Length: 393
Image (cartoon, rainbow, N blue to C red; front, side, top):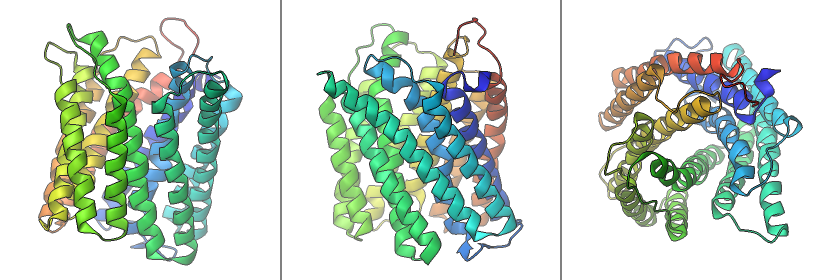
């Protein structure tokens, strides 16, 4: 079946579908149109927004990319269907179970959904680990980008376990741990590691006279900053949080300056670079918030909507175009998605600064959902068809 011809097809299909539908669902929930009111079982729906995105919607997108590039980073053959299809199946099952929970109000479905997502995460991370260990056994490497991503998935597994404990025991401390770990030690490290590895590579192939810059010490410094920021948030230590956020602001600002194209560049690269520009903004907002400039959830959404969502459009589009035999160009649907994300990020930050005004919240979510829909539909149709160039995959 063509849908299983390459890791990215099925996993991207599950991921973009779940991402777009989750944001659409959140728009209705914000407008007080949720079918089960404000609760799913004993859990307030406001506490489900972040976990659903962090642990059900985004990981299949991660694995769709990583199960493709991990072997190639280390010079090994592509993975077989028997390896990657179970990961996609696990996340598809998790997505379906989550919707049963959201629309029936059955809390047990949420436990099943996040439990299935945990198993899929363990399966996918094990596949990645086996490739990395094979490299070490063969006396090569280490490929530090691979180990950085594996560390992020290790943190994610601890967050997923905490989330399941929250769903069973309703301990808010477990929910807080799961969401902060999910953001700062899972989502951000994965995206920043991929940027560190791929952005200079893409730019060097597309921009005349571009000199790639990706020192490993930068990746190490970013990890130190993320750990400090996370510990500061978990232990309610503003000084530690501010130290981590401040260092991350400096490191990502340096990276942005080094990676910025000085000559003409294609739109697909600019989407990646401009999306990355949200990173120092988000960490600068976190630094200000730790210094008692009350910004609410503005730092989180600069990083998740501004940076992460832009990177999803950039990277998923690039892989989808290239691995379907299409030119590496930004399609019109991708332009709409990217522009909508920028507006949604600004609206969400405005909501945070304005005491979470409902109109800004709904506007941000609705714009994002509507702008992602044409892009998601276009990509879905591509995944269901053979490559244009007749090649396998």
